[in-house]
Image (tube, rainbow, N blue to C red; front, top):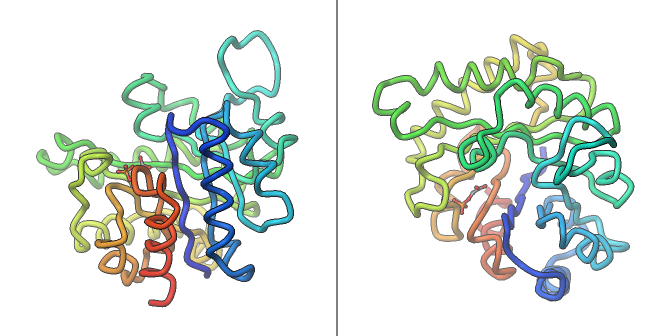
Length: 250
Ligand code: PGA
């Protein structure tokens, strides 16, 4: 499995900054490395990113979408239009969606299904809060989020899972490799139950939460870590590429 480095820009970068980023990234990576990369620009910047990525194998995806393709849903993003605009992926259930925007758990499965129906690849994000971890509830929370998020998933189609402990996102506090290994092993086992061992082994598991070039290799060596979902450190093309360079050769 190739090592994936996915960059979640959150609500950063205007179209010109996005174009500059893509130009610098494309200048520095070899064509055969391109399919390891995916960018998640804010929706308003996606058009510029798609244009800048023309004739490249670098992908891009939505940070969020609704589960209907059209209708009276003010402020939402259509998965159908994401696809028409050139996206390959979409995040589902990022912790900021769950926590800041109070997205209910039962919409995740519908979003996963809507994306897969269109041939887009969902990246289902799961992760415990600091309180969950303190109270020893990490495994229970991860299991619940996986089961509800994947309830309508079609495992014959592409799907990815990102483990992002909420307490490690944007805090500079990266999870310890032992903690990551433990949760990724658990996720793989749940996927084996849901999709069968052979299929589960092909599903990329990403880690996210304060990944930087300086801590990437300690996590990338873990057997069940198949890539990273990078927030803050994905805003700078050199740092983002460095994360890949520290990880992909391991
Ligand atoms: P961070 O964000 O790398 O800035 O911690 C990760 C994410 O939210 O995907």
